[in-house]
Length: 358
Figure 1 (tube, one colour):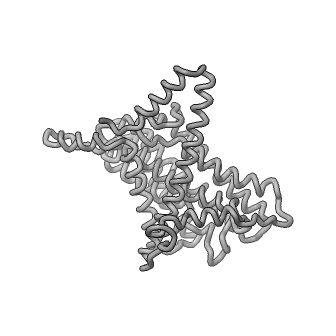
Figure 2 (cartoon, rainbow, N blue to C red):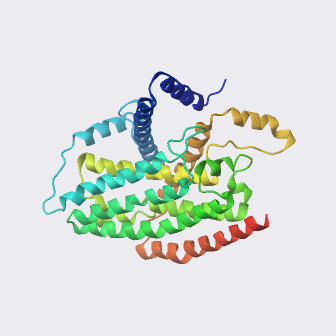
Figure 3 (cartoon, rainbow, N blue to C red):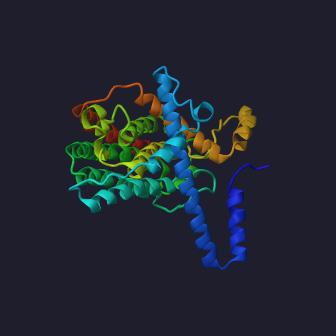
């Protein structure tokens, strides 16, 4: 018996197309996919927030949320209801249009990138031949939202936070993008499905161990910086900037920024899983004695493989955040422009030579 959701998706599609006109079936499918994707977006955000609060508590020898629900599992629901009921404070002398547009740009950039991930075999909302390019392009919308939020709030702390964030995100996007392009050279395609299928026999991180491992490490560092997580959390440095670029947002408006920030963490992990760790492909050992092991790995559903790898990288990100102290702005930019950028460019050249030789 297969535990894959691909069969359920095909069954639902066949049922709709056989009983409804083509345009009606397509419209219903679009609505269903959008609703399911939005629900998954919100549920994953709640899970990530709960995980971080619990892990942070363990690092600091505390218990974390433990009052509402078993093991504090319903605390996030209570917090969500509270933030929905909070008053939205109107800011005097702010640029009203840009103030509200910034929220939508931040959440839309995150949501559209999230929708491009392949969560399992046959579980892809969009799949076209420039999927990786689409992810790199659409994820940049978040930077514009952050800059607009800081500028339009008419507050010196939000402006400083937005300027820091802009400098940080634009800088580290280069290293992250070059690391992904390094793996595109190995895959020979920008199509996400082709990249995942190319790792059926071995994940890319094992196919070209040296350049792939270097690209993987650089991408994790750059991706961690793009999510504004410690030790790269300068745009939100509480001791200096109150709350950074979203200081003047309240209620559900602040909640949208909070939601996008946590989902960006999962998106970085999801892209790393797709490009370096085989996506939803299982782990195989290519040896005669490992056939039984490979059969067991194949039995595990593809979406479990994807989520397991992605959450493992999220836990690594949380570990880093609560272990290392915050960098200064000059140290942060020095790390990118004088260390990560030259290494990533050189590594891309090494990967090109590797592909030509092997």
